[in-house]
Length: 192
View (cartoon, rainbow, N blue to C red):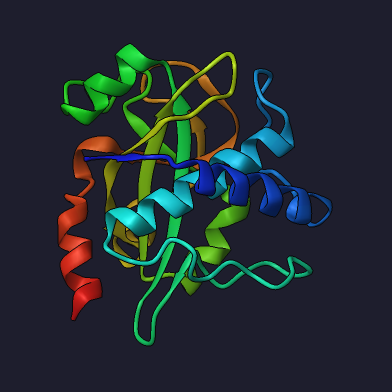
């Protein structure tokens, strides 16, 4: 499932990333994207995911970013964290079609070990991605799926070892892409 990014979403993501920038510590460093560009991608992913789930994407924009939030989607009985990546387009399309093997490059969704304690605050984690762009223009967010945080914490431990014989830059949980559940299931849970 893909969500089109509107100009209103872009403007809000730029505005919110500028407001949050002084208060955020990034857990993964990327050579191809600045911290503020990553913040924009994160906000766009959050907005698109909310829309994908049938929620108002504007809901939950914070008054300030002085402290870490309790989740990206906060409902009376459900809290959701949203993770968004940028991935080369050809690989992204294979991930959307579930044609990438878990133990190959891009076959895992990562959570930095410094973020693991925060998982206790969430009921679910959602993953999605944009096609990587040299111009940092992101038009469509693609939903990969979701998992229960209880499942993640029970089945994964931080590691430096990739399943394809290399090392991650920092210890992280490396969630198998094939284990992600269809995002429509989470939409049904949130609609209750």
